[in-house]
Length: 364
Image (cartoon, rainbow, N blue to C red; front, side):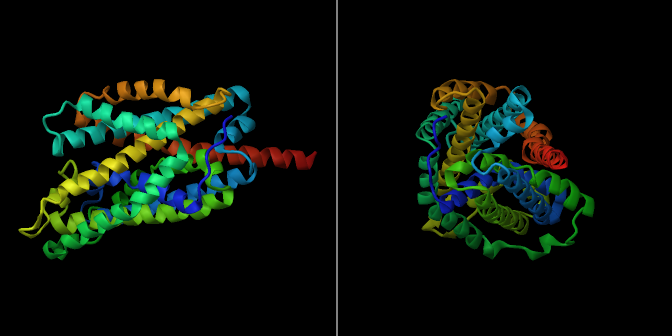
């Protein structure tokens, strides 16, 4: 297998943080507000704890095979046939993530920016850039993320500060919202559904080893979940949960209402550039992960010949939902619950199997 490119832990932190934060630019925050009401900003706390646990489990799993990634460990632990079947689950998961994100970001661009452009043209544009990024490899994506990260961070900080004059603090009361069950059970279940745990296991050989999974994974999780909490809180303070929960793209709505003076308005055009880059980064890294995982499962020397056919499949999958509400429904009902399988359930089972085999060998 062609070796993955190398980059530092700082670039890995930026890459994982930006891809994990991509969901805040879509309908996901509105879905959380619909769940937690005015206490929706508390819901990511439980998801963060679960995500940190997932990163810890992944690091312990990689510790048993320090020179291998999660794809190789899965095949070695479960055997050739069953291991390949499980690796195909990873591929399907990455392709599903990429397809739904492609459709949602394309719909968002059609709605808020290029209103007269056919969505198929926007999707082709996204996939073309993502295909180039995935072909150039992880190092290119990581370096690009590192270069643009300060601009993205500054842009979001400006957004939060600019909205301060219109905050209404009474919007967050009562603090418990609808119920503790919605906040700490349903909210945790939704926010813990990330793709970066299994993604870190796939690309781990590019930025370090199992020790780096904890350090980089924990840092990226804290940063992205903190950003999600801040965005939810600002949305509720600005609009109240009744209005914010009905907005399809809350981030764009926040950017659109900024008005500091006659010379500083309509700044949403700047934020369109920010979330377009994050969309490309998210889709490109998941497309790369799908191609790399499939190539390793099939014992191919290089993943790049698979990128073009996978991109074509991705284009087709992104248009299977009839409309935007159907896409959001598939995301919240199937993809997010399904994300628990490759990120948590499979790593836990693999770790238990490895420990069981080790115990049997010690007994013998």
